[in-house]
Image (cartoon, rainbow, N blue to C red):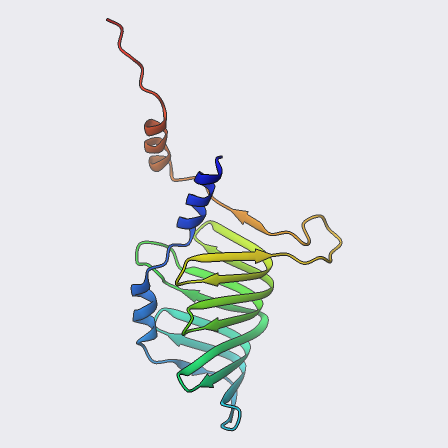
Length: 185
């Protein structure tokens, strides 16, 4: 596979439209948890126990959720758990983006997600794994790194799975790339 083809597949692996993000950001945030603590001095709210946050199609679930506010509103949402999870329907014609990690940090104004420790990002059958994943939803830039420690060969590495295209799409692609037989005079 050529580098250009690989980058093209990676670029379209997790398509994002600003419409979905904007529509979700216009919705109210709803949070359910076993308990909540608000600290006006630090502009923080801490939710604990079976935490579930929803905003439009966005869902964050965790054991603990720390919301840091600033003058513009919510600056960051830090979800921790075993694991914490994020999901969002970014386009109506693609599967949901689902992510899990020990810590999921969402920056709504920057439209970025940071997955820390045992990070995994999935859309349909496509998968990206690493110890640390940062995904810029606005710019559609994903970066991942592994850890330097570990006992097995895959520790310290990132993993990406790109499924083959559906049979109908593969056939169309093959027909486009296969040279046509020339007719004999």
